[in-house]
Image (cartoon, rainbow, N blue to C red):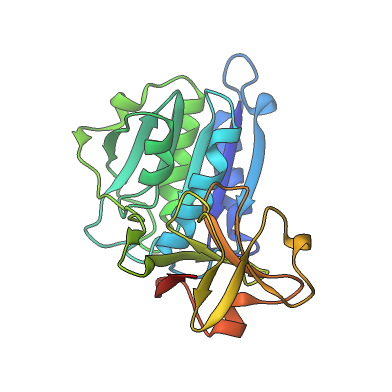
Length: 252
């Protein structure tokens, strides 16, 4: 049984979530606790950046087998009226807040079905990852069907949108900036030619190394989205752009 974790928590909070899961499963028949494999997708998602978390989860879940449980927590609304969810899609399960975080990934696997989790009265109002989502994941790992955790609901959606054709090229949105400063766009194909951004030519390439050092590039990333990069440089800094910025790519 694989359980993944993704959050903006940083260091020690994810360990508490794992401890809760293992404690809940300790002593269950079949030694379930001993068969759990935890995989940390990331805990350095930018704080409160739901869209960044959603992109990271979307980019990752397709590499896991059916039966995997994903706990994702980027939750600026923790403790408010926002719902807590378990979502089932394509044979994988997700637990997390109802703020759109889970939906792009779940939708990529199939047709998501969501159920609301009712937090128990003693749950912390600031740490649902530990007190709501981890216990829900433990119940599912022990064989409890997601539908037994609460009523079926329609989840909050999150959509990255699609780049649009314009008279001079493309209008796109930056959906994620990775640690290299690459600008990942809501464009799931590579333009057929070099493009211009802010008057600077972007060389269309298959690999980063096809460009000269510090040359601006556009390529199709391993996640399936077009990205603007600078070979051995940082495109985000060079173009003064960040996630959620809209850009105009001009055809040459």
